[in-house]
Image (cartoon, rainbow, N blue to C red):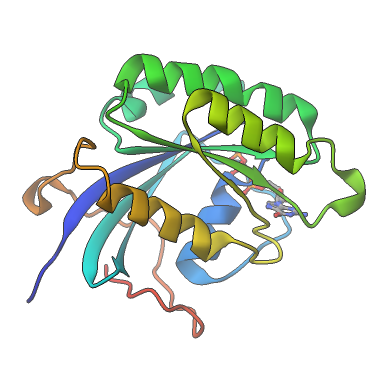
Length: 202
Ligand code: GTP
């Protein structure tokens, strides 16, 4: 059996179409899909990952960016350890909109949460509307971690999750959930990426 590790809930927030599902899919399966399927309500996935000899059980809650699902989100923020707030570097509006998510998460969870601001779609080089400095400045202003990614290019996806587990490891104030309390409900079939270094369990 061995050490099952601590379980942490991660909630993904951000505008419609910024790439929340794609980041999760890239991390879980090492895959990218160009077709867009809006998330309906909330999706849930779980993954066990190792960082510096410790096991972390991550529950990934993928929220829908569409306005009509907004009312569902606060209840997911309430008991999460990490909020990953995503914008599209090619959409200024999606960047502006991250502020209200950060404020909402801070209001609900105070310092008992790790906030990660993520600028996705860096592969859209010629369409970029938000500079890396703007992203960094906003993250600093709100006491959040920062990362730019491209789910399409598979850029910085693994480092993003390493950064998260590293921050969890160093922050005992962040709440975690006992294994018994973590319900395993994988809604999607689990596939393994041949390149994945991370151990994956159902
Ligand atoms: P909602 O579920 O509606 O909130 O959207 P989402 O934030 O989960 O976005 P999703 O992952 O579904 O991606 C939306 C679209 O953007 C899809 O067509 C993806 O293929 C595309 N996309 C996601 N990530 C990237 C990226 O890094 N680069 C590029 N070029 N396209 C991306």
